[in-house]
Image 1 (spheres, rainbow, N blue to C red):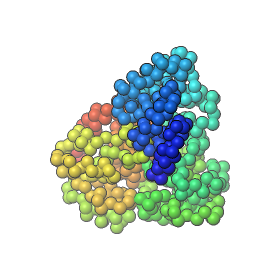
Image 2: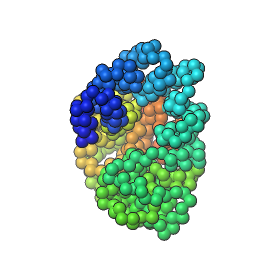
Image 3: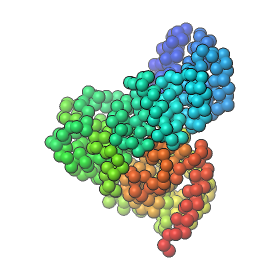
Image 4: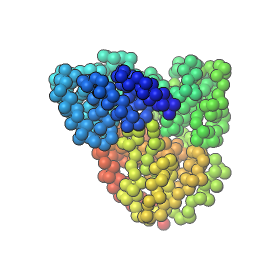
Length: 475
């Protein structure tokens, strides 16, 4: 908020300097979802520079991400007709906008038309790779990323997309080293970590003190923290830095390691190496799915929590936990990704209820409020007593099945060895591969894959499977 206030105050004083308004719009759009402020800044640019193509393109992009797909595409079409010399640049914006709101097939058609006319920039090639990956055609996507990198080899966004696509295609031996080269997402509190030696696969860790720290999201930490035991087995002294919701869970699950909150870590050089937790598959030598540590569960609930949280659950079986939405995020690209992976409670419940089972809410955050308007089959909601993910783990241990969209609770359930059904979006995340009903990461997971933007057909598939699952349970 302080940064946003500074941007607005600066531009208010310098309204006649379009460069400042353009830079401010780019920053606000990158780090927030305040599309109203972005629009004001862009319109100031156009007031001063009516033919500024990037400003017009960003406004069309705003139309699309706000839900006016037809209006945004019409704006882009007018730009193409007015500024044919900027066709490639405008095409970059069109394809990016379509990708971010979940239209990869349409983005690919736009890109094919541009390529046919001889327009090939690194951004267009990157967007083609992204479109194919999101269409779950990852092997086909790789040459496009490689061609983009030949044009701009150091561009971090292309490197990250290429790495994720290699991993999604199952090419772990090639993918993890490229993933290692991504731009790290490190907050201000942990900025000092950039100056520390970063752990690499060739390092002999015996006797070394290593700090593992969260980078990316909670789901990434839950998925990859299993590899910490490999470092300890090789003789490393391992400390783990994670946000508060993970502290108790990881302290109990890894009693031989020290688990710390980021704010209490010393910057005095106590560590020989540091490592982002998502680096661990690469560091520990994962080359194929057979190298994934087989020990599942690798996380465990605190026994006293299980007793306390179990008392909140109703009697009777089967008990089924529900999660329908991811965490609400503030950065535009992450908020748009969340919109693609999340559904509403009414959509989920309308598809699978009523059913002869006891349903328990595991949803956290703002989407939990959707329960208040529900008037159908009873949903038990113990989440008001949940303090952290250790409590959530204890709740899960008292359930017979968890059904969730692609967010951190699905990783927690898998890491605990609980039966879990993942409702995966159409443009499936790289960690789930292009196809299949299972995951090598979590043996107790069943994957239901949407094959279109709407979740309704896959929810109907889940409902049918759930009825059969209930009917097949022993009396």
